[in-house]
Length: 540
Image 1 (tube, rainbow, N blue to C red):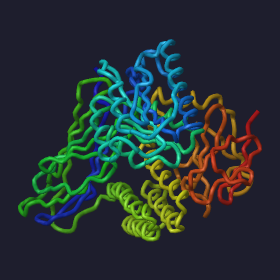
Image 2 (image 1 turned 60 degrees about the horizontal axis):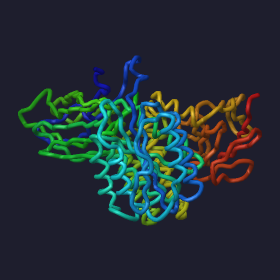
Image 3 (image 1 turned 180 degrees about the horizontal axis):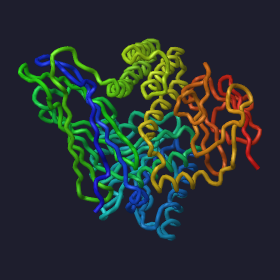
Image 4 (image 1 turned 135 degrees about the horizontal axis):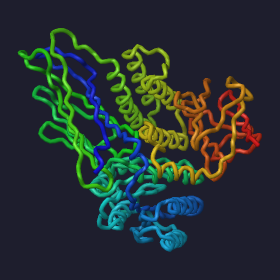
């Protein structure tokens, strides 16, 4: 029987505290998934239900792209996998029963998909419930998941975000729920809450033309998970209180302790959270002092055995001011930055853009002062500060409603992508196959720098998703006042490279025309990013 798939590490942002004096501190909890080389290419059979929003707004290209993308995913899955289709609008129905993917089943699924007709409203509650019912009883040693795709707000059934999240949470023992939001009108807040509660991921599909790429990521992540039912119990010692838990996680508190539900994890992936504590050792306490005990629990996908790992962390109690741990504190500041972003978003949603921008600027100034950081230094904290500063500038310009919707969804998509970025977004075998299938036979291509600073031989396009911008995480790093942190991206799909703007503000141009939708690049096309011009060329 395979052993545990996860490891657990703890860090406190203080190394010492004074006796008989309350001291605020933060605990950083990190859960990481890493497998031995000989297990990395194995996965259990997958049972997957696609829950498709077929409301009237999905009519036309969105539905056509969804159908084509699901057909491609069905074709690459193994014969031992099972797939079902549920549609939801004014209620929900099973379009295709869950069944193993022999040749006849694949043909039936394709036919069922082609017969879907968009209509009516959006009953997301029924979509979730019918999808869970469609999965049926659990088959031993099987990974199970639901992928919900929607382009709008729930208009029927229970529309409360907390209620929909609770429904998804009730499936966690049996199936992971991930969500894909289409275009500018979908409700990213609701879809993210559903995915967090369901142990899955949220994906932002900017344009129907690129649906296949995001769906491939979602299917791959669902099938490649190495741990499910992940939770961390945090039990504070006497003299220690939990004040709050930061991060996009679900928390249950009982008798001073807390259970935090974490997402399912892929090979090499990491998930972390920050817990604010008050530590107050007694006056007679000196030396080593235990702060918290933690207990990590998880299952291998398809298994029933629960693996448990326990860790304890403490501080040194001694007179004098507390001693800080700079590395742990930097990780705390990165996590707390998301809280500042959330608070600013609440203001911006009410068109209070100047107060929202001011809030982010104060957060940036405070973080820079505490970290003694005047300029970006390439660290995660430096990246976070620079991103917050850029977002403050965007809000200060008082974007129009359409621009703000795009900005808001880009924020949500960026946060979701960052949570998948820790070495695992395409690490597993199904993810690699899915992305390769969607990419097709891509040409050998590069971008030659026509205007601006860059390597003499340009930038070779390698991989299926290439980000351009100022962030250190960009595959093509461009610097300049009019270049955003994540300015635009190039996605390989159907044997072509598509350029898409990421809503950075100053826009992305092709041959002098501002990009408003993904564009397939052709040899000789000139891409404009800020003051840069880059010419797309294919090698013969």
